[in-house]
Every structure is written in structure tokens, then in C-alpha cells.
Image 1 (cartoon, rainbow, N blue to C red):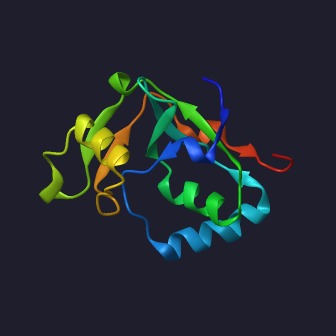
Image 2 (image 1 turned 45 degrees about the vertical axis):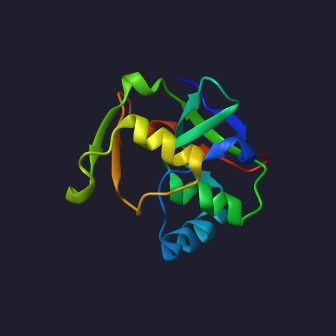
Length: 128
């Protein structure tokens, strides 16, 4: 898998974030290290839904980033779980609809599991 640098304007969120965590990550970014976020492309549009990395995305946004390091996955290859019992009926279609509508679920609602370890893709963002 390769890391792609995608315009921040093409990325859609489906979950809220914790402002304290976003602020912490904004400070960490000054060390120039980042684990790429994981996204899936919406086939009918030139947009991507963030599956994992909402806090990292918002930290980059806070730091006025134009592009975000992403790993693009086929959503069919991703396992969807749930952190919150009251949202355990949320489906992949619900995640996509939520992102497209701009109606976010509460933070830590969905848990996406991938066939790779994201930390294996840690990178130096200096110069991007």
C-alpha cells in the first residue's frame, strides 16, 4: 500500500472529535511525524470518507495543511465494529451517508479494522 497526499478539501468526516486530543496532536505535529489517515473513495464523487484518523485530520486542518497523507482502502475489505453499544447497528452505508450529509456521529462511534498496521506507515511530514 502506498501513502497518497490528498487535498484536505476532498476528505469527509463521519465522526466528531475531542478538541483536547486535536490540540494535543497539533502540538505533536510540530515533531513532523504522523501516521497517515485511512480513507475510502466514494466512487460516484471525487471525495473520500475518513475511516480512521479524524483527530489527525483535524490537527492537520488546525495547522493549515493543504494535503493529508492517506492510505486509500476498498471499504469492502474493511471490518466495521462499534465502540458504543447504542450505535452497534450503524452500517458502512450509514457511515458514507453521514459523511456525505455532514451529519457526524459522536466521537468513537465506529471502529474500523484493517488488514495492515497503520503504524508501519509512519512518515516524516516535513516538506509536505
